[in-house]
Amino acid sequence: MTIDSARLGKTIREIRLLKKMSLRKTASMAGVSETYLCLLEKGERGASLETVNTLAEVLDVPAVLLTFLCTEPKRNRSFNKLVKTTQSAIRAAIKAQVDLQLEKELVTAESRRYSRS
Image (cartoon, rainbow, N blue to C red; front, side, top):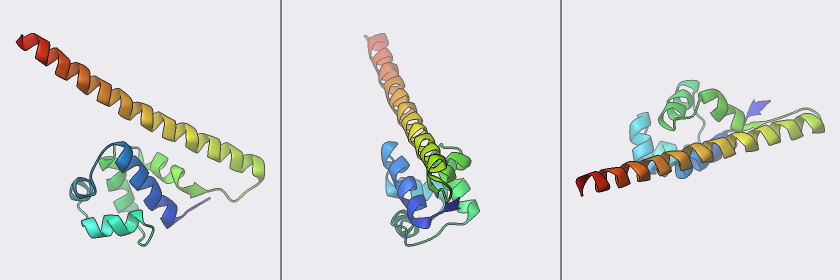
């Protein structure tokens, strides 16, 4: 399997948007420029392993999952299907994590509101 720069950028953007993080905030937290992150997300720039690890940390996704999500299998059909199915399951788990966090924040806000009443 190989990591494709375009897939890496697309995956980073997908997760960033899912987590409702702005380009500016993400770039700042990762210590990279907005321009670089924008070009990376468009697949026009590559990323060092250090940058991938930092972005994974900022996005709160294990680096191994981030890199797995943007790999392109190079084997037979059944192996490709397994990889694609696993990638879909990981994406669904990340979305569920985000939804759970949002719900937790809403419950906390409601609790504070009612405790002040």
